[in-house]
Amino acid sequence: MISAAPEGGQHPVIAAKVIHAGLPAATPDHREPFFCFPILNYLSLLPNLSYYVVRLFPLLFLLLLTACGNEPPPKPANVPALSELPLIPLPASIVDGEGDAYYETYSGNVMPSSDAIIGDAQRYLYSRLPDLVLPLQFDVRSDLTEGAYRINFRDGNIEVSAGTRDGMLNAVKTLEQVLHFSGADAGAVYISEGTINDEARFPYRGFMLDVARHFFEVEEVKAVIDRIAPYKINHLHLHLSDDQGWRIEIKSWPKLTEIGGKSEVGGTPGGFYTQEDYSEIVAYAASRGITIVPEIDMPGHTNAALSAYPILNEDGKATEPYTGTRVGFSTLDTDQDSVYVFIDDVVREIGALTPGPYFHLGGDESDATDHEDYVKFVNEVQKIIKRNGKQPMGWDEVATSALEPGTVVQLWAHPDYALKAQAAGNPVLMSPATRAYLDMQYDSTSRIGLHWAAYIEVDSAYLWDPATMAEGLTDSDIMGVEAPLWGETIQNLEDIDYLTFPRLLALAEVGWTPQARRDWDDFRRRLRAHQEWLQEQGIGTYDTRVLKDGGEEAEAPAETEAEADDPSN
Ligand code: TNX
Image 1: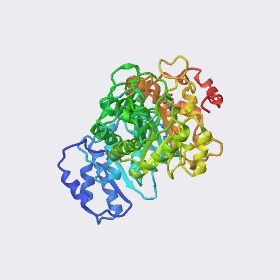
Image 2: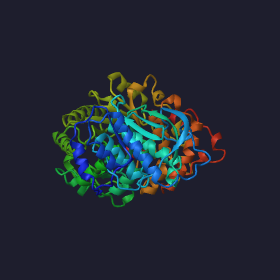
Image 3: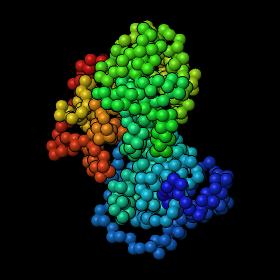
Image 4: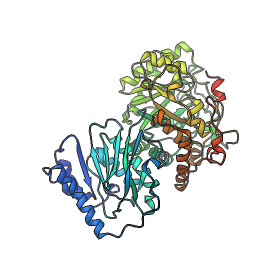
């Protein structure tokens, strides 16, 4: 049975859960059939039962309950085949079976598995669909690696298989869409038979939120996490500092937030996360399969820090707070030892709160830093990050330095820097501004957003292949795709929704689905259903022209005009 008790959920079988946790795993590959958690946990007290017997129990109980329960509601005229469901991102493989099955929902108490691979996925699914507890069987299979998963709908059973926690989370994210688009939340849970076999094209699918230009509260960041997780976005990159604001408490340098946290673009009050706030975001994201990537942008984009600590400045004087939107005017003093002490403190404190492997050093648009100083600085900061146990990431200009092994180069404007990364054997993260920047306007009528790189309608966000962004790159050089939402023009969740949805769905599919499976017309069909679903959830998605009558004729050009003459190229 799906699900998990809500946090702190009470149930008499809680003791059984503890006993279960103490049992040796049957084999490295194990399965947890459950109709509801009490049965699951009862079964787990009998470790010597053969697999087949174990498997029969839930079926028997299912039959029993079905017999005692209400008659199934009448079957809808058309139960869509799995391959007809509007799943986004499209799975790598969907094989339709024959026929369909009715699933009874269970309304009693349920308990999550104590197995971390399974339990977190059950908890996630329950948080999304608390009223839809179905007979599910979770199998842990070591042949399904990384985020891969399989869902089998057969013989009236739903078998969810994965080898990792991420894989299981991916599985239930797909399952939620299968249930929703099969009409399950309306009560009649008929689902077609068949098999979904899926894994990501790229391991990293990211969304970046700039909380420096305008600050967003913890609750707003959580709302963003809730919105992006269903699309299998598995990294949330937080741009935590810039000229206009410093957004995370650093205990050893308190003025960063006391002074640098006060401002934001436009002169409205800023804000910052205490370390506890940040940890709360990290944990909230983790429970939804999302790793936080913290960024402290340097040596440029540092006016907020320079306004708080004169010692970081070349002339030893504090700068004025900045609330405009220019870039490229600030720099840390790259010659000073105390600057590197400062960076070490910042990386150590943030790193200690960050379970994920990455620390992003920014490194973009450092126009006020002498190039030689920039190279020396980026070389040193990569070492500091590594000494603190993290893997450095940087915007593509960092490739002009000596890349440390493993440093991730995030392409935003310079394909040649991605090629430098490839030559050095470093991973590339794809965020081309002309395709992936969510702060770009859809068209000239968009109420917010910028357009220095391009206007990006949904078709333009969809119709590109990360492997062709820099000539000679192949999938194995590319770690993934990230969609950055810069914050100059966004002030609230409504603004975030407007620029992010539905474009992010296009980018989520670019990062997940094999290129050969991607098809614009089919995506548009599926997007239509998601647009409606987003609206039902109260997400203020943009009313894109590509879903309007005649929108299908508006093919995206192979290359945007801005791509052809991008000043940053
Ligand atoms: C460029 S892209 C920036 C940001 C701006 C953004 C606005 C990059 C690495 N730097 O500082 O916010 O353009 O689109």
